[in-house]
Length: 302
Image (cartoon, rainbow, N blue to C red; front, top):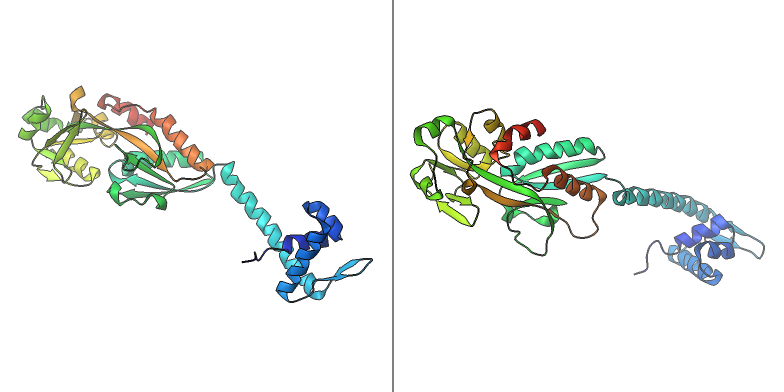
């Protein structure tokens, strides 16, 4: 199929330059090619655009109208190209970001707000998800994922850790004490996700009969705040509770669970906005494992 724009650039150059020869020089094409292409354009349109004489060129009435409209289109196209070109040189545009409900609705949302304040030219659109398996990567510019990636073909970069700790209210610990090994949790009131699994570093997993189960980290935090039992929650989710004494955490190395955080992005040429956001995450998190002792400083920062 012949391009609908074919011949138009040549026609505009002929009018602007005043001759086929000058138009060819400007476009780096031969005079004969310019003449043939403009003639094909006229044939396609079914109207004569130019009156050719041995001494001069002039526009027909149809040619004047066509030139005016096409010149405006060419100018608009140039403006659009410049605007789109900003994506490769400036942090502008929209970033649609998929965030886990467990981690994203709290800590990550705060990071996004801070990033937006630093980059007003970027419109952030955070979308919370509950199950990573339900995420369609192509629907997002960036997805924040945790642990082992489901697909090795994804383009991704680590930026930190989602660090879990065992936490409860001071009253619950005063009444029941802390577990000393993972298996001790079998004798505690536990608050978990719907699987009843509590994970630790070293591929250790304890399955309990939870007193309270939810697929939402925020809901589990609410239950733990009420003294219903022990929960394994991201330090960033309970940082304010720890800093203000509403909850306490077990600070034993065996009790932690650190999952790598990944920023997964779409294939193809990376926009400056995407690059800026990835660099921001790496800079802010420092790729460090988060521990309960850091809670007070984390509250001050975020």
